Amino acid sequence: MKAQNPSTNAQNMRTEICSDEPEGTGENGPSLAEIRQRAFEIHIERGGIHGCDLDDLLQAERELRTRYRRDSDANKT
Image (tube, rainbow, N blue to C red):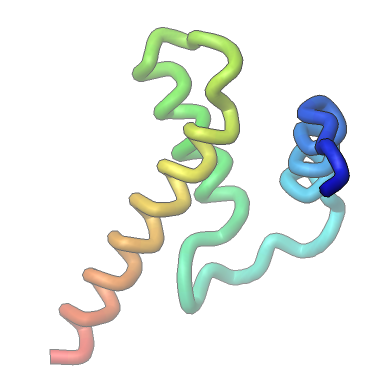
C-alpha cells in the first residue's frame, strides 16, 4: 500500500474547496459558500485554533445538511 503524504492530501482538499467551479444553488442542500461560512464560524467559536480546518469543514457540512433535511421535511408536511 502506498503511503500518503498528509501535506499533499491537505493541498488536494484546499484545491477542491477553493475551486473556481460554480457553488450551486443550494436547492437540495447547502452551497459550498454556506459550508465555508459555517466552518469559519466554528473555527472562531473554537478560539481560532489552527490545524482543525478539515474537522471544521466536515462539522459545518453535517450541521447544514441536517438543517436542510429538517427544513425540507417540515415543508413537505
